[in-house]
Length: 329
Image (cartoon, rainbow, N blue to C red; front, side, top):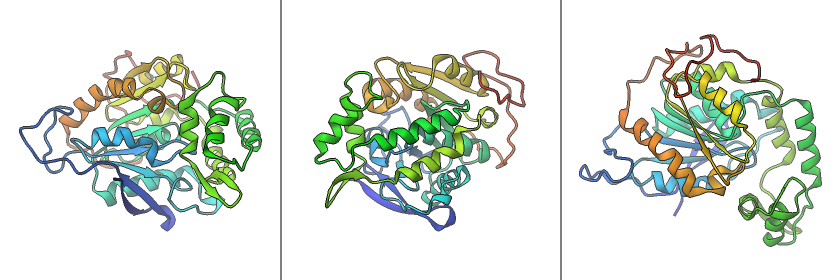
């Protein structure tokens, strides 16, 4: 059963954090999962969903990780069961400060951050800002390049196309999994993903979030590139993309090159919702990385907001100049 823990985020916003597994047993003879010991002070894991997501989208991953580590998934502001503050409160700084507060208040640091889409951007921005709190990073299907005004207009049009309210959850699954013009071929996992973010009201099923607040959240990142912050991430980092996702292979590999300690994984038969589309392949790609990071536990660096990239040790070869370029690849 999931356990809720309240966290106070930036501006006093109440955030819902969730544990989906019992705390790991302190058995020093048990090294089956990730090959780690459960010593006090071992890194925790914070899972950050993407735009429109919720903590429960990470439930399967959190349960798996929870066998050996404390894994917590966060409903970010405006999502899930966290507070829905006014539209002006959805800044990049607020999202990053929320995740920072979660790490500190939950006692997870130094932690591995696992983020999908918007959650991945939040994760690498926090890793750059507070390297003392983050010992590892998994970036799942999030671009570092600017997306531009046309992308924002497309999203606004897409939200307006939703046939809300939906009469039943089956209608939700069918529209997002088959009838949505953005769906190229039937995708049941996409339908299930969106069914999780709906709640029933007097007139039918509607999203638990406000689409206008989602657009406000998205507006804070789509016009800018985020290569410089990526280059400031000093911990080991894994970039994961679905073969049919939104992050292209060339950009993903450039992100690996820019990261001082970057690695790359690609999952076939997966779209943007990588961990939801192919959970077994997702675990196969991520667990070896987590094994190494969660057993190393390096001494955390001094906190700074202007972290200087270290000497590269990436699989993809030499990274850019130490200052980090911001232009899209």
